[in-house]
Length: 282
Image (tube, rainbow, N blue to C red; front, side, top):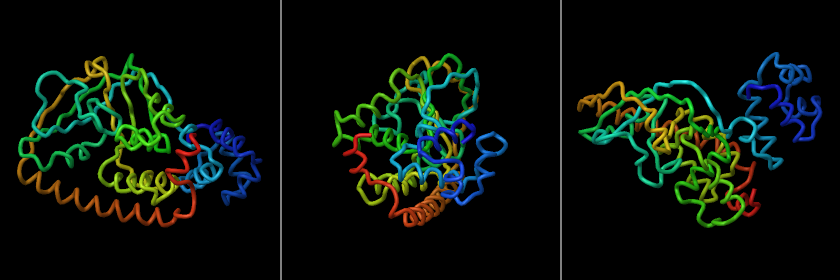
């Protein structure tokens, strides 16, 4: 939550005065006033409380903090892991049912792709320089739209095919060259599957995913985006490195699942379930 206008817009959508919002969040009127004047930003605790208010009022918080088309002249350094090495030109050639569809996946954190390839003896880790200029990019923040976009690409929205919500999510990245969004690894999918199976609410889901902080992934969806990727380093993994990564990956997985379970218990009575969201068609 970086802009004062964002906080004002959320407050207006909640139909609250500054004093009323302050009371619901357990902060002072002066604190909310400072947020809206841009003198300071809400703490993470306050942000989570605002998200909770939005969810209880059936307002999708993600529409305020992201999910927008961006343009930039930025060049970024990213990482890609391959089970057997890249052969030929970089292309949007992943399997179909990945988080954001078929594309070329890159991460901001070098360790993340390493954990995906550590079981393969011929695995390679690549350091890449990516020029984002002249690309149409969808930047998706953690929120319900993010979860539903992953659900759509993973085939979890088929029961709602042709519904309003299905069509909206299907068109979310229409015409985009690249998507930037948070990583959904095995730790996240424990939580996502519980949401899709109707075991936890959207509020429990979003707070769990926010807490895991796995970093972002950049997904090149088009040939145009792939041509903007330059390979600057390629490295194989030794047996010792792969064994260490396996141990770290399993430890992090267990820790992440335990954290997510605790958050899900905390929010088990708040928010909406997956079938309720589909039925509402929002």
